[in-house]
Image (cartoon, rainbow, N blue to C red; front, side):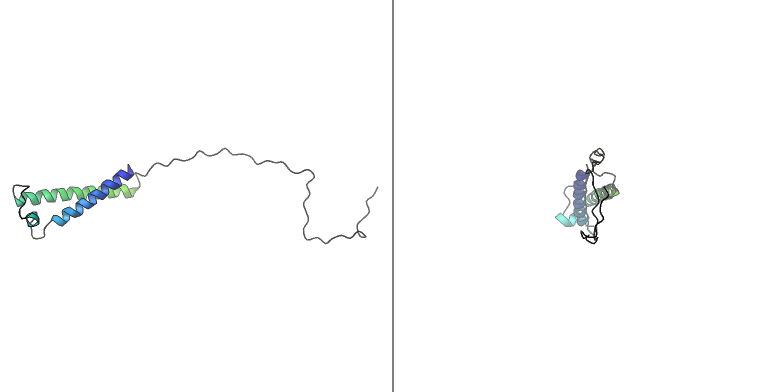
Length: 116
């Protein structure tokens, strides 16, 4: 839906630009574009129809802009299920002793004798 509205919004924008360029600042209307507006009964009715279509496309463009920029029509995101929590293994090595670091080396002469 979001992508479709973006395409419609782009088409409306292009049509709006073309219609605005068809307007004549000297009130010639479509008569200046093609000699005479033969599609309509008079130049006045052609200008009126052009104004109405331009206002309609302007309202559609602004409405679509608000809808698309508002973030109301974003694509639904699929969230992955949360994996089950697994407790870490608590196995320890038998008779594990920490290894001391940076200790002076003991000499055989200074080692204490073990009592029997």
